[in-house]
Length: 299
Image 1 (cartoon, rainbow, N blue to C red):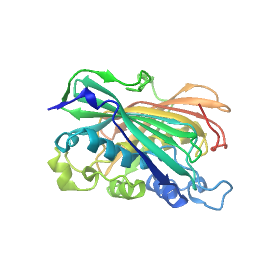
Image 2: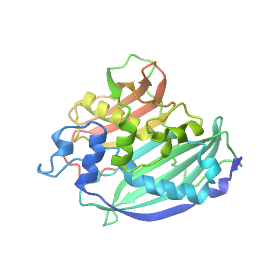
Image 3: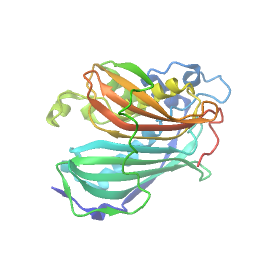
Image 4: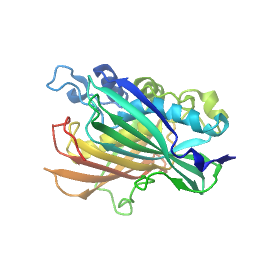
């Protein structure tokens, strides 16, 4: 089984997305967010978009790109390995966004072929909104060489200070229905998260929580720990995935403040462990500034 490096450069899209308050609120509700910022449509500026919401409108392009480049037999071997999101500005209700996606790198890794896709989203005026480098490992699959179409490809996250005692921790309970709720609210459907027969056939012990749901819960915890809250101007989120979250269970999110600046900005490193101490998110990193101007553009 092999993936050809010739798929680098393959592109799909653009695909248009109408962003409304219903979708923004549903995604936040799936994560257990109850604050007015995420739920009150009467507040000035409307409801706030959760920082990881872009995964929702990127998913249809991910499916199209996989169909165009990877056989169905190999697709079943894919796991989410890395995530690197740059937020130029947060999406908001009323946006008409346009997303394109392309393969930007194929590399051999010890577990299998590492494929990086880039999702670029702009608004109706063509101004950038979000850019995501999404890395997948195809377990047990080889690739013929190493190719990158972009020297800025984010193939992983910088290591955090995880050897030191964390500055904060938070335990998050994971209810068994969360995978189903997240699937419908995010509009991200992959049957390994909701269909036990499919999950078992794929070699999993049971249905598992989406990696993006785990990351979103960690981001929420990091924003609470930082004191910045829902309206922080998040500019970048990145991490490596290293395990699975079963349902029901609990996760422990631990974090470190790696750059001071409580009134201007901060860098936070974080990790996620399962209840039995197994790492599921490594080298997590969030960059944000304290700002209510969520409609501003950030480099």
